[in-house]
Amino acid sequence: MAKKERANFGTKLGVILATAGSAVGLGNIWRFPYQAGEHGGAAFILIYLGCVLLLGISIMVAEFLIGRHSRANTARAYQVLAPGTPWKWVGRLGVLTGFLILSYYSVVAGWTLEFVGEAATGNLTGKTASAFKTAFEAFTANPWRPALWTLLFLLITHLIVVRGVEKGIERASKIMMPVLLLLLMVLAVCAMTLPNAMRGVEFLLKPDFSKVNSDVFLGALGQAFFSLSLGMGCLCTYASYFKKETNLTKTAFNVSIIDTVVAILAGLIIFPAAFSVNITPNAGAELVFITLPNVFQQAFGGVPVLSYIFSLLFYLLLALAALTSTISMHEVVTAFLHEELKLTRKRAAALVTLGCAVLGILCSLSLGIGRDYTLFGMTLFDLFDKGTAKIMLPVGGLFISIFTGWFLDKKIVRAEITNDGSLKVPLYRLIIVLLKYVAPISIALVFINELGIL
Ligand code: PHE
Image (cartoon, rainbow, N blue to C red; front, side):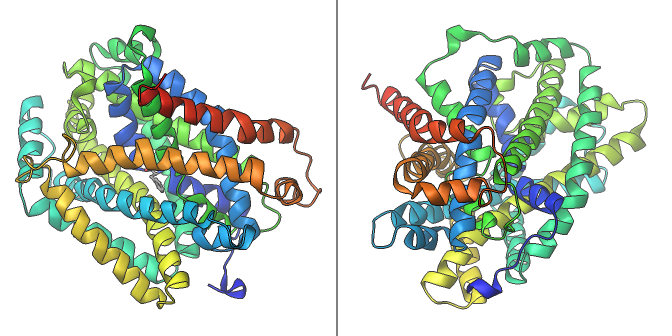
């Protein structure tokens, strides 16, 4: 895209909500609860919050300033800022990461469509807890249905990306995000009134540090990057649409707060709900699709109309939240192919959609008939999930912090963070220290620890 073609997000609120639209998605509502469950609950959440505060916000500011200053796709951004250096590979790694995440993410996004259908046709009421489990397992093991939903989701994403996204994303996010927040709050209150709910709240709030090991750290770090859309140039691409007046630090804070609130709310729904029906929350990635339907029917047991409305609204919003995230990933890869391979935007988008469709279907099948084909002991779906979140995104974040903290001209960094000196940013020094020392050292330490070298 040439400079003059680059559109801007229209309003301050639009910037925050569109960026939050990328950040808030399945990562918060589907992935966060099961990651917390698998990694022991409250202690994981504390470490997660530490990662958001110390690494997430500063790296988000770094991605913003790289994107806004270069006004280019993420790989080109490094060529603009550091011509003739290998830094462009950080951008390219991001593009690859986005492509891989989009592939398996579309599978889960597809499940949300199935559940919209199930909710709409009233199929999510009148079942026992175990019937929900059996139905979901049968659904994901089916070779056709989930694959078709994956394709449909990719197609919807494709159509929006091809048409140009700025207005669409901004407008949709402005309506959707507040409704999503409100609905999550109501559901959290409902979940907490279920029998045994307090055991779930305890699991969420009472840390057991005896369970903490290097894998918990890496899990929390990866989840923070995944949830904040960090480490793959996604926010860098969005920031290339920011206006000159946008306050990067404030935006990073606001987006991180919204993202964290949504994740914690999701936890406050899922954990009490899981304990109330005796499901251990480490059950895995299916919590949102097995435990939640049961909550809807139990919480509003006496009034079926209410459980119908709530479940339909919830899966609809979940699908939309996933959509604003898939659009942002698709956009990263499409912009890259369009600008670097000189393909038309339409062709570039088609290539991304096709590639993701093939990989997405393979990921989907790997949960059913392909279950026995494993790589490094994992199904393709798990390999994509863990490989991207636990390795590729943190590696991306490591390099982004080193690039901004050590390599990039300080004048550019200061000019972008303070909007050419017109903003007072009291945390400026802290952000630089975090980018220069805290982020690279702590990410490297987590990796070294995980590899067992320390
Ligand atoms: N942050 C998104 C979510 O939580 C996922 C995502 C990851 C989006 C990386 C863009 C880039 O669902």
